[in-house]
Amino acid sequence: MLFVLASPVLAQPADFDHINLRPAENRARQFQGEELDHLPILVQNLTATLNTDVERFRAIYLWVCHNIKGDYAMTQMNIRKRKRLQEDGAGLEVWNSQVRKEIFSILKDRKETLCTGYAFLIQAMSRLAGIESEIVNGFGRSDGLKKRPIGMANHSWNRVRLNGKWYLCDATWSAGYFDETNHLFVFEYDDSYFLMEPEKFAQSHYSYSNPDKLATER
Image (cartoon, rainbow, N blue to C red; front, side, top):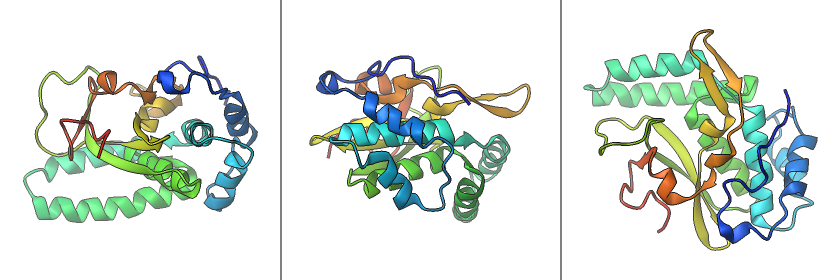
């Protein structure tokens, strides 16, 4: 798999225009293909030579997006099951607990996952690097959110604290897409979801827990 970036600062807020992110991108390339068996060591390898939190987070984010595949079969099964249980709160809670365990097992063994796994891994690796990160649950739509959604959250992403400010990112949508014809995941990195401007992020993401602010601030 080729490691391709459209532009090193394409989606960067102006806060980081002065920082050269190429060393971080090189670290992510250097450890392409590493396994998840020893996550603290992987994070150390990715970030040890980098000087700022945004560089360290860049290396982590790129590594995740270029090494973790979307799990097509699990995604479709989860969608079908959640639809059947949407009126059964207790049943849905049991299913979510069961599928979460399976998601994490598949993530570790095969490096494939759903949005939950992407968000969990970004959070876990960031925290190992000393970077504050949280998972945001909500709704995602590729055609923009025309109105306030209702019902169960259908997507997860992250917010990360850099230089005292919160920024938004979505590793699931950055990593690639599902080929619905062949029922498989295609790696196609999209840098626009890396620290995307909040106003643009809000066009396709709606936070379940903090809808008015997209969970960008406390």
